[in-house]
Image (cartoon, rainbow, N blue to C red):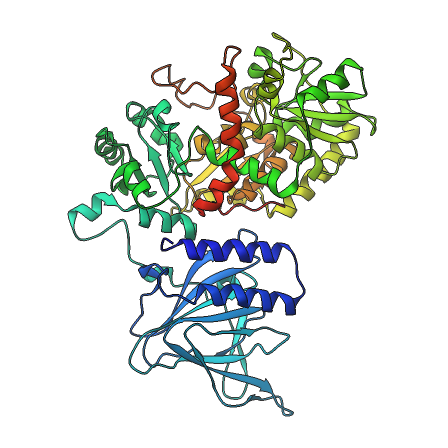
Amino acid sequence: MATTDKLREFIAGLAQLVEGSPDPPALRVLGAALLRKLVASDDWLPEIYAWPDPERYRQYLLYCDPLERFSVVSFVWGPGQATPIHDHRVWGLIGVLRGAEYSERFVWDGDGRLALQGPPALLRAGEVDAVGPAIGDIHRVCNAVPDAVSISIHVYGGNIGAVERATYDAQGQPRRFISGYSSDVLPNLWDRSDNRARTAISPEQVRQKLLIGEEITVIDVREEAEFALGHPLFAAQIPLRRIELEGPWRLPRRDVPVVVYDNGQGAAEAARAQLVALGYRNALVLEGGLAGWRAAGYEVFEDVNSYSKAFGELVEHRRHTPSLPAEEVQVLLDAKADAVVLDARRFDEFNTMSIPTGVSVPGAELLLSAPALAPDQKTTIIVNCAGRTRSLIGTQSLINAGLPNKIVALRNGTIGWTLAGQNLEHGKLARAPESSPATLGVAQQRARAVAERAGVKRLRHADLMALRRDPARTLYTFDVRQPEPFAAGHLAGFRSAPGGQLVQETDHFAPVRGARIVLADELLVRADMTASWLAQMGWEVFVLEDGYENATVTGGDGAPGPRGKEGRYKRPYEGTENKAAAMQAYLDWEFGLVAQLERDGTHGFFVI
């Protein structure tokens, strides 16, 4: 098993455990069993998270759950190092990976002072202990090995580096503190002394960045058709010939870490040189390119927009999103049953080919338009796209929002319809009506509730200005309405990214993994629903609540024009002349994405 695979397996198991919401005693028992398995072998912790400091112990963040339900930390103890007396205020598990540690527990005596609760407990490598408000939360810990480093892995029921807690003096007087993490002493992967390290980075180092959630961009500089044959999960694609055109708007912060690669074509070095000339001083080449990534044992994904599609499959896997096969939908339509077909794709895709009786309702518009198209709660709502992702996300959006109708996806979209031998319509212009004032308020309440469940943040225009002034973080600002209202008037600095397409093509719009995203929509519904999905995909995402009276900028978003046909990957779900074998192969690929996510282990997705 590769170095970080054991940590990935532990995180996946703990996430599944926490999602099941066990009672505290069961969580401690089951969580301890998982942690005991993790610390049973000392061959998986990356070396940069095992560095001791000569002055004090170090607390390195290994993983924080996107909803902050738990965090995993490595504590590194030099000889003689110890913590002060402190509490945690959340449940915690401690497993010793290397060396040993002493733990002294304290309780309050009758005079309101802290008193030792028995002699110090010795915890050896492979052993696990627990702390928490219900079982004893105040202790002091020290390295039990006098002349060597000890390392313990701690798991807490929250983002422990951000939890306000307390240390205590000898009289038991508390002093508030927030610990943070020791990332300030991690080695700088982007500024090493030897020339090779300053221009190249290993696959292992890239994966570590992805695991701990730091900003990083992985760019495949081959043509799209080559990119679609295989790439890392979070890789985006900018061909060498388009670096100067696309780099400035897709990578808005010039000191963001950028890793470029090819598959032996020799384009990566040239791409890095172009990026450096454009001011991207942290541009590096992936050692070994795509072959090096494979050789390290890491997963390679095919097709385009792969992680958005993989996320859609995970949603169906976790939520059992309901769907109907094409044959059953055809029976409903032939019988003129009480059902509506809502097409969640872009309008141009709908116009090219569509399901009979279908209406164009691009993804982020669904919650606004569905009540008008299906005002009777007895009406069945069928959501379709070309394949699977947008229909699954669209269907689950309406279910998450609590619409009372029966809501199903058309299984496998227009591909499934075609493979079933059923006819599509062409050239249709049917668009969804605008929402009425009577239904808008309810839609806003429903969308906001979904966004809050997903952990979406909200901000006002003054807060946006503060985010824009932060030089250490990449910020994307997107208007998630349709292109026509965007062109008629939008906020300065915002780009057009219709919500359904932003969820479908996130790697195109926001290639900097770990960046912040702010969404604008004067009705808020589209922004809230889109943000709910981006948050579940691991993004720090905000919805802008005010300032829309200043949406006076007109025209397009300033992005460079179409790339042309050089090397473009032919999507099996686009157009009307795709071969049946190619369409079926595409569906089979999508069906396997959940297993690929599990093997890859870097995604950080969750599903509400």
